[in-house]
Image (tube, rainbow, N blue to C red; front, side, top):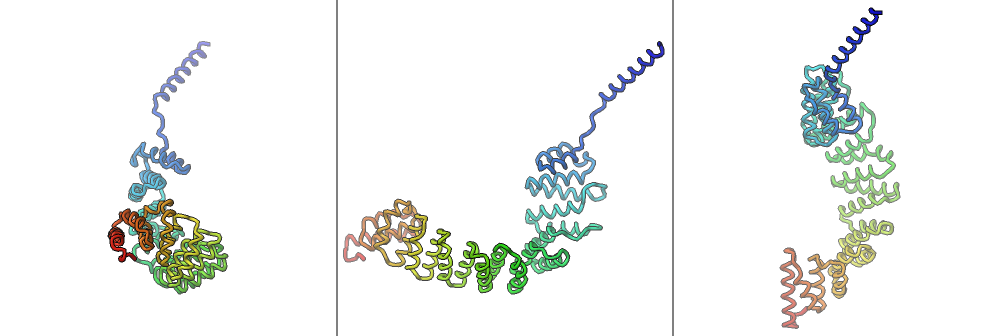
Length: 391
């Protein structure tokens, strides 16, 4: 019995000593890198950065991974300058260090961030560094597209085209890369080739966006006939969608045919009343003031309608109608606009309403029309003094 009691006392003493030793030991360090990675996966970039900054790159035990996670956190927060600094540090820390961080990923992220900052030489340097790594896989679509953008920005469009062409040979046809390549052909002025290479894309398109992209590139490059043909085909195929008609009208204006453009917009105006205003302006440019006034009468926006109508009536010489618009223009607040105010003042003077003409002319304040308004006031005063000087 005595031996059992002694053994129990010794066991209790050992247990107490063990517990005291464990209580005195410091708690283990948390895996801040693991916690930060988990927070980033869950979309908490700011919290991930805060966890990382509780320690230092050196103290973390894996400097390359620490900087990589910090760079990703700042990239997610769209703090691109500091993100690039962190990723550059990750690449530098990776050299000569056994790290779990993927150096290829670091370089690709560096290229991405440099692209957001439009630092195109840095983009190419990072992409080249990724491609030069032992065992590096051929670049994926995103890296190819980014390289091409950088080359174009640096004035190396032909090289960018070759890059996209080589990627297509390796990856197969990709519509996004094809769109980028077609845009390059437009940049290079190779519009016929652009049209030919775009046919396959257009045949697959179920919406007119690709037609619009190609047509706009052709228009900007001065290939107006080709742009017209492409848009006319899209208008028939997609039942005249509004963006196609709008761009087609613009191309006809560029070709010197505003009347054709006006008719196109007038056809759309039944379902899109906002087109009447532009149709009226295009008829005016074509010299058809009757059609312009007819289109203007259908405009729903009263301020825009009266503003445009004043100019059309002045151009048509229908000055009595101009003078009659003064009360309406005043109600709509259009007398605050010098151009409208001066046009109405001129109309009133021409029909003999000298009081209203003087009142309106004296209210002109802008430098562009001030001298002409002063001259009109002088003409009103001279007319009063010498009626034979009146128009």
